[in-house]
Image (tube, rainbow, N blue to C red; front, side, top):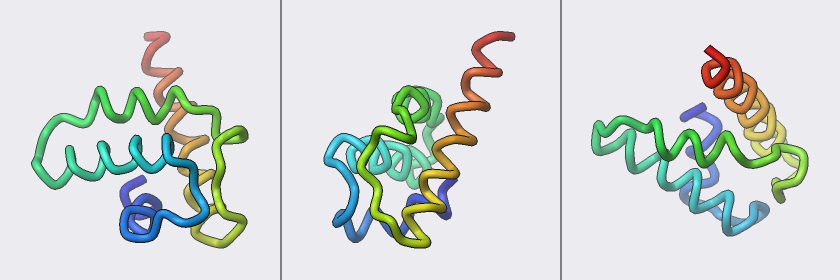
Amino acid sequence: MLEAIVPFITNISGISQSLYKALHRVHVAHLRDHAPDESLARLAAMDPERVKVADTDEGRRLRTALHHLRTAHNLHAQT
């Protein structure tokens, strides 16, 4: 997930403001060595098909990562 985030932390063109903020929170939690649970939960709550993501290789990689995160988060919430 972090690999998919990096291109969008420094260049926010092509993504929505709410997605940028959620990605930034995850990135900062990682840099500060904090538990990313809350920031990942916010990111997982976003619908990967509805958020604005650029139609580029990086954008498609991010959308795929968001799908995986959402699926993993939902599976974890069910247990």
